[in-house]
Image 1 (cartoon, rainbow, N blue to C red):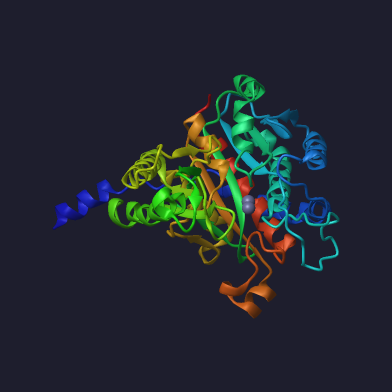
Image 2: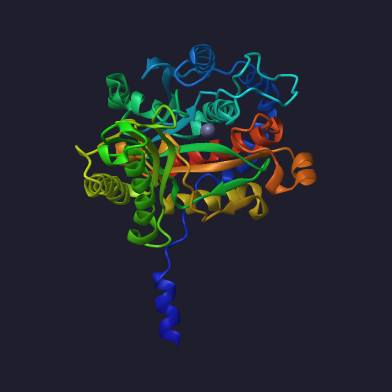
Length: 437
Ligand SMILES: [Zn+2]
Ligand SMILES: [Zn+2]
């Protein structure tokens, strides 16, 4: 019995060294001090939303704010993207930590009634990317104020077009991105936040996969058109398409392991012109969600196999075309060790009653995951609750406006005070515990 206890004790992972804990009070005090000024920046961001790929004014403002902090700013990377570099002032070489924030808004007509509501009809920061940008600016201001305490480099990646899944890929594909990293050294940890409709001032971790591979697939079914009264003289692509839709359900229900994320949704099925004409062609549009490369490849292969063989069973004159959109979003994998490390740090910073771990499988997409995946480094994206306490208490967790809702209205003060302190501490933790480059 003794021996078992000793062995178990040895098998337990060593507690992480929380290097940034001594800075908790100073960082929280600094965050509280700078938030009133940053609220103006947040309100400007919220009032001036720009949709994916068109973040021109937003990028200009971000660039100015980053320069004010003394950061080295590289503009127009992957479209409107920015890479900004902050160097520590403590002697010696240090590690490199990447922080990503996104800039784009959504084609949503705002319905919040806020005094700083969107000035652009039909466009709104309904996903809270304005919070992410302001949060990052606040964290960089604190890291800059503490620069004499750390050595190393913070690489800020301010990306466009998260909502279309194109921004991260566009930045990584731009040769200037690699040129900046060649100077700073390769990042060893990638961090990002996403706000959520949870109570403002809380933080949420999702160890492992936190968002899904998102693939769009088009299936074009070929038949033989003709008169609706004489089906024997046609090959009906509508019936073939309907059979494909039914057979696709078995891929998830029967051929993937229960509990593993696999979603195949046919969101659009079109073909034909009127009641009595059998068309020559029908078209299906699918969204496919999964975690990891293996499941992604399996689902895409199965979709192709099912479509082709169902069409052959119906004697289709040619195999259907199965086109996978090259714009694909990879799943985000939160490194379990770093997730736990940061969770302990956050508990030390804001208390266990405000830090949560959630294990729910999400089929949502988020292209932050491309940075750690392509760079081959650990990454963590955590959530920051944003809903004002009064609304949360009055409506209950299930009924508060969620992300992409025209009524989504974060409590900026509470969200930013917590968010800025936590992000600054998380980056500091990376800078103080990772090996020097
Ligand atoms: Zn969104
Ligand atoms: Zn978002």
